[in-house]
Length: 490
Ligand code: DUC
Ligand code: ZN
Ligand code: ZN
Image 1 (cartoon, rainbow, N blue to C red):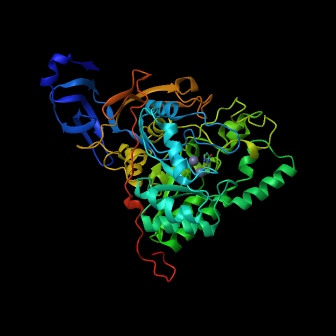
Image 2 (cartoon, protein in one colour; image 1 turned 90 degrees about the vertical axis):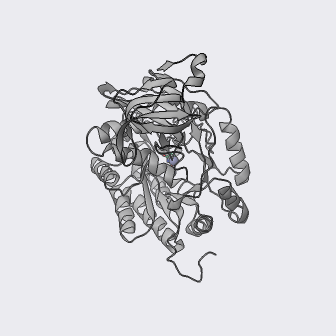
């Protein structure tokens, strides 16, 4: 990168020019320069005049910064464990892996109103983020006050998506509550994200496994078999159909859940799907690692088998899934506030769920998807950035490279193989589940609203640069208006 002295300021047309890149959007690849002023793209052309700063992309791919539509940062817990990443370490890690917008979750906390929980989450983010962020909500106690007032008001204020859980004792909603919440989504134009696993089946199986002494991390997968995900996915689809409101099934792990989503899509229902790296690159064998090591890969739904990985790839390739997220849920391994909160002998029931992945999401999909020919680079951009921004009402400000969009850019270094190890990552987690994988792509430079936040192998972001984004009500959430019923919500 070169920069010019202040005395030349008046002569230069741009704050930054990214020169000579192969600029990729969800539809095109164009060889051009990118001119940036005041944090936005203001020109795309074959040859632009000088910028105050210049980055020579030198024929490398330039993609829109990634939008991670599902990650957990500094999220309060109820089991005494601690989120390893706060808004600073989490967004530094995101930036180093090419992600320039994150959407973590403001969870409804016990003893706080939803609005207070959102305020608390803002306080956690304040002054810390190095890239931009929006919030989803998590609704786990849909009281009359929440349904009638708080949720509609928050949606109007730009919190236009929320997650609901069909499992986890402290989060789960029953079908009646889910319909209540979906009715609000329908009326207010918000998008409902669903964690689809059958709670009662999981508890029943967990009790049985514990009685049989089968408590090791691998039995986390035994307690959440594929039918548990398939049934809940189907039920979520049914509730969405009844209410005529679109939903996004998050972190889909299995072929049978994919079948349910395709079945619904084939019937014309607006059912969207998300998957994550752990379902492409991990299997349940990873939970069988010696000792307690399997806990490193313990997440819900659990990783499945090799065959499932292939079905998940196919569903990414054929458009069943619209978005590819990290579900970054950072818990340290060798830590009494992490995976070992109850020690190594404790039942899998007590091991905090989740794997880290905010930094590795894009490089994994670029290396294994684009460079191995499974998806093309436009699909890569769509799945990791454009579709996500559209899904959550942030497009076209985020998710593309176009005049008027925020200058969130990634310049890719590709081709030279290297082994991934945790030492190269910037999260505050003491492991990566992808340790030792050979990759062939990593961001060379990441730019957030015109500022370099990762370059030359070094984080360069400034805490507080990241701004909170309000979201529009997304087109994705629009009902089809086909459902006619006396019970239809007004
Ligand atoms: N599953 C979730 O639902 N959330 C975070 C982590 C996980 O594994
Ligand atoms: Zn979930
Ligand atoms: Zn999650």
